[in-house]
Amino acid sequence: MYNPKDIIDLIADNVKKTRSPFGIPKFMANTWWKNASVARDGEALLFTGLMYQFVPYIDTTTHYLERYEDTGWANYLHYTKYLPKLISGTGLALMTSGKEKKRSGRILQDIVKILTKSNVDFGYKPELDDYSGILLYDLGDQDGFVRHAENVAANLKSAGIQKVITVDPHTTYALKVLYPRYTGKSFEVKTYFELIDFSSHNGSRRVTLHDPCFYGRYLELSDVPQKILGKLDIECVNVRNSGEFTNCCGGPAESISPKLSKEVLGRRVEELQSTGYPIIAMCPICLANLRKAGAQVEDLSSLIGRYI
Image 1: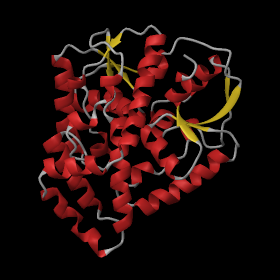
Image 2: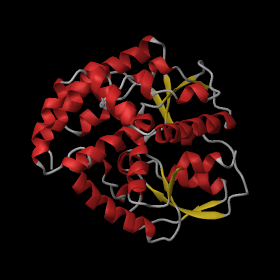
Image 3: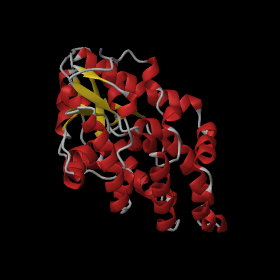
């Protein structure tokens, strides 16, 4: 296991100086919208929080963390925060698979198609789409989280944003629960799947939903995707630990201990695979982690997108 303080200090320093937990310039990480037919203006702002965009970089970072965990090299991790961010962030971007970047981008493009099909009045402005800071909160750096959140919330308010559409559980929880509590600024927050308004009778299949912790335990939204899939003629076969009693995929622990993350992941994959049906994830962290275990899994938006 790495020294948690080294990890927290590194991530906090990256967020403070680059607004990204990995030090990657936003113009390099957030490019999916260039190949999407999405308007800039609308009643609501599509706010991705950059979580899907960061997943390929998380995979690359975890690969190296796993390699050096419990070795002498782990003791030098805290020195990496002194590297120039442009160099370290660009280096990470260059080491990360272009194929994986495009795959994450396609998920967001599917979400745009889903919202368009549902006649949702929305727009996307990449300059307003920022990382929520949620990892700082998760790791216990509350002061760092609040400073970052206040900046993000102020930018949205100054642009006149009142309604926000989110695409992942971490960002949803941050904007819906944490931002009002710690910044005093509130938004009307809806996930994209709460706005889906179409049906299909061409599904005729069964899947197993993996409920992310934030949707299942804290936001109580697990029933919504099930109802949506029901309208597409897709049956959800539940596992024992689901909804508010869902089990973690292990993803949140991988920055501190990839080995511990693997142990947690192994137990969850065994549960999900017990149904014998394909697994559907609703969180970029869960999706990436389940893929690492070799599970047959795809994102909820990718599944729904096939019925447009």
